[in-house]
Length: 184
Image (cartoon, rainbow, N blue to C red; front, side, top):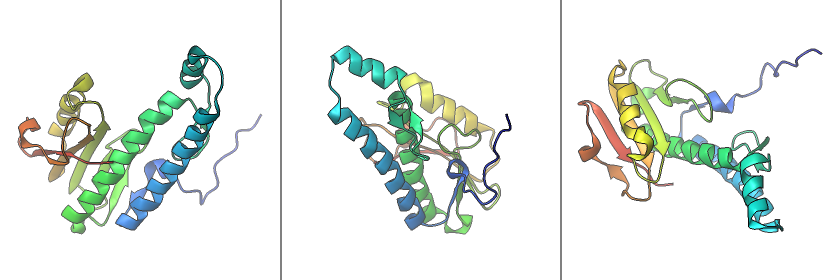
């Protein structure tokens, strides 16, 4: 069986470049469409509470936030909120660093810096969504990852219901790495 190769001109949304707020908003709308499809499925579900939980965890009844392909709902939730934080972070970075010529994103399960400027070594950022920035030591780990990064400007962006939007200097443990909370 031969494996099909993706089309040469196919856009890889997991490794996209965002140059304007309008481009971020287009991707944001796509993420919301995947969420709407899954929400519609949830609203139509009948059966026991345990059936619902099993379906959320083990069945591919959710939708990949970028491609729309079937995915388990737990993974969809995790990817959706991380991607939304990335998009809000990029919007802020576009304002802060217009000289960056845009930002390359590593979305979903892509490896590498979560966000980096198209202009080499100008901006590097990590992102996450959590109930609290200390959950699973995510903030500490992202700051540690950025500590050795050579980019001139380094950031961690997060979203957590426990924190107001804006910069949080009290969470900055390494000089030169700013920590910001973004709204979704």
